[in-house]
Every structure is written in C-alpha cells, then in structure tokens.
Length: 237
Image (cartoon, rainbow, N blue to C red; front, top):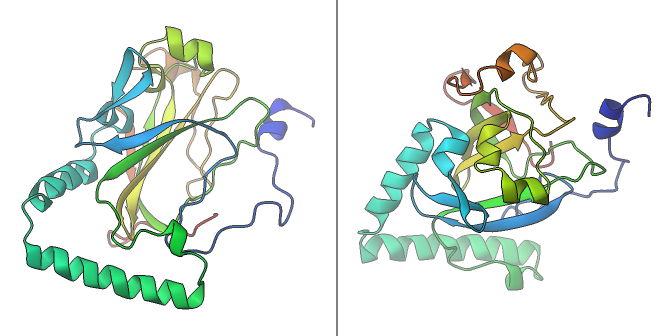
C-alpha cells in the first residue's frame, strides 16, 4: 500500500463477506472485536467504558430528539393494554410464518415475541482491521452530527486510563429509523485514524487541526432530506 490511509480503506474482495438476507438479523457493520453490549434504559442511560468509567448515551450521540422520543414511548408502553400486546403477538406470529415458510431453519434464532427496548454494541477496530463501515440493516438516515475533538488512542490501555474517551474523541454520528425503530451509529476516530468519510456526504471534512483546539464546541449537524425521509441505506452498503 502506498500509504496508511490506503491500507485502512482497502476494499473487500468480492464475495468474502456475504450479507445475511434474513430481515430479522443485523449484520456487523465492521470487522472488529465486540468489547461490550447490553440494554439501555432511557435517553440518560450510561455505558461502561471499563469498570469505574462510564459515559452517557446522550453525550456520545449529542442532542437527539429521536432518542428522547423513544425514551418517552418506552415509558408509555409500560402501561400498554392487554389488547395491544395481543395484537402485537398476532402480528409477530404472522411475521414468523412468513419467515418460516421461506427459511425453515431459522426458528432457533428468532424470538416469536421480540424484546422491546434499545440496545448498544461497542466494537473495537485494531489498526490492522478492515476500516470501512457498512450498514447493519435497511434504514433511513435522517441526521448526521460531527463532533470535533481529540484523537486519543482507543486501545485497552487508553480505555482504562482516559475518562470519557469515546466522548472526548472526534466522531461522526448517524441517526435514523429502521423497521424496529431508532438506530444510531457512532464512528469514533483514534490516533493516526482521524479522518471519517461518508459516501452519502462526500463533502464532509473531519480531522481539521483548528477544530482540535476547541473540542468542546457544539457538534455540526446536518439534516438529510428530502421530505423528512432522509437517505435510504441498504444492509451491507
């Protein structure tokens, strides 16, 4: 490779990462190591960086009307009626039969009545990992936020010593909706890997030296239109 950049953004060989067509599945957006995952309770929920170090979802994603609406909806759903739950079960059963007829081996991996809630997954990319990011599902991206910031390393030692590491570092957040509701992807920069590029917005520029001097400034936000639909991404894009 002519440069480190060329190495990091190398493409995949055709056919080496087949995309699971199952509509109930999410595919991993990257080739990385899962550090932690779990369920979030409300917009103010915390994620453990390591034991003793936590950061809030809202500080990672920024001001998020979609996330706030979801938290309110989950609170309302706690008081939902038996009739609503019965209707949801019926719809779930119909969906299950459509899938089971098309692919009879998937029953073991699909819940007949999926759990409600918001979940997170933190995936670490080692320097030698393939660094392109792919869409985990079919979804509509509605907003992009760019947070200027530091470029601390994000390895294990750094996570144990730098508080709010992922919130301090430069990052780009995409938010939108898929068939199950809210979704967000946060791409966090690191030492020597500071530039984050979006093929849906090629004019976006990150990793600008001037911005690093004032990392606490509000994020730059861009709404994707037209007509509130945003940008449609297919699984694997």
